Image: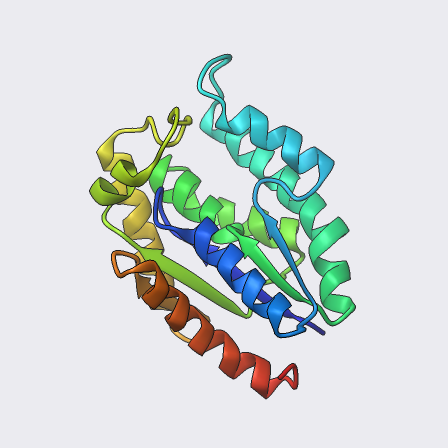
Length: 208
């Protein structure tokens, strides 16, 4: 079985940058690795991503939003993540099930026990071996974003504060699985902290 690593955090925290950096580091060391993201990573997931991220168009209800993310996740787990893990690869994923819990559960205020059940169904109980929570005040994260804001970036500050609180609670509830990193640190320092944690896992599993 391979190694499953996920990056989580609010808008502008740098998780996409850090997931790519880790992917490149692993490639450079000859570790079999794939990089994917949520929503996305499959044809269906990429199509759903466009719907969920666009600014204009039909309003999407919180419940419909939840099930769109779930559909993308089912396809990604089935077509990409589980096959890669069975092949002994390292999977680096930019967002996973925790994003749904915090964005739709804490942000949209949907029932979190329902979301947990849906996530278990969608992933078939699959969880990352390690989750990096790149923690950043939303005021700072939103300033970092460039280009036209998407649907989530257009939400009010209270929404993004609820998202951050959700991440903090989830990380505190599973300290062995979650690693919280101050995302206001320089990118190079964050990258070093990520690598230190991953390197230990790779050594323990015989990748290095």
